[in-house]
Image 1 (tube, rainbow, N blue to C red):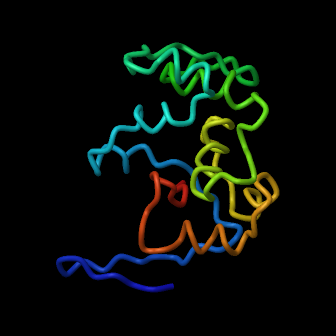
Image 2 (image 1 turned 180 degrees about the vertical axis):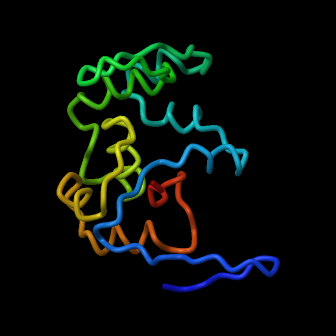
Length: 148
């Protein structure tokens, strides 16, 4: 465990392992001023990219979790990815950059946290490589450890 000092406050930071769950941290997108919707557009299938070329104004929809029957507000673009695009052949291709492949897994699974070990089994990359990428100093696309 390492400690970081910010303005006199000491914060503990646990070093992630291959079993540490990660997810897309939506607050990171807000804090950095980046547009998640633009990023979502890049992960649509070609048909939906063409349909939404000049508009990202898809509404938030009420999605019903089939396991819990809980009604969850979901971005319309994210819903398209989860329910259609992620099921298309080639959505998770071996030639995708590592960060894009990981991001797509989280889009497809509703952002359910997964560890580098679990991600490795889904995208065919080394868990150690995934961990080095996700646990480094730079945060890519909001991919961060999931906090409880």
